[in-house]
Image 1 (tube, rainbow, N blue to C red):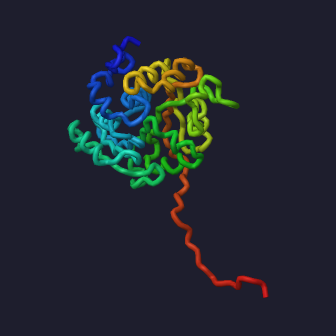
Image 2: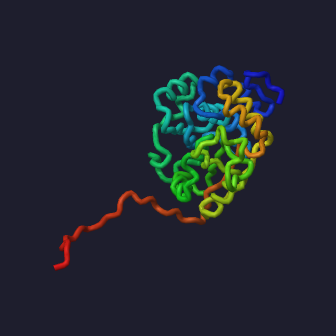
Length: 270
């Protein structure tokens, strides 16, 4: 990499490098550069002008604005942890409020109609809910048949079977069990029978970009910086996966309540 320290310029991400570093820093909502990951993910997707896109777990909305500005798509910028009000100010300042719509919602309780979206994108968020064996069935119903589902974020270059490696233990915590490899995501989605996986891979030198981002926005985060330096891509990196909802699979309808009729019965034997 030839980027200047703190500049967030990178020849690996030419689209993202057009955006002002101060604007990117002001949009931080997680441990990854959402524009870098969105640019990498969309290189493997087909987005066309006017498409309806769900940006799931969008944080403060930088990825949603990027998607609209770069691909002229309509984006429903949906997040639970970050409120919609601040996101709307950011969207308006970017001149995108006619096409980017902030939504405050839980990924497991989405307020959208079935088949509404042409694509779903999730940046450094999907691991918090998408590892559930049943979640893809739930999410896929909001995408039209043949529509795309794409995720990108922190993950593993290889699964950790057994104890966590010694050099990771100072940073690792139980919740990081949600991190998985590209191979794991490929299998997880394919075995559902709901989606056809087009691509699942690991970013070349992803750990270096992860490290560069941490040094730019959280230079005091010594635990993460040290573990990335120690690991050097052996286990930690960025992964992405892109799939299409199968048209030949009937999705299970979500169960909101089961109607039953109560009939009074004696409590004890007589």
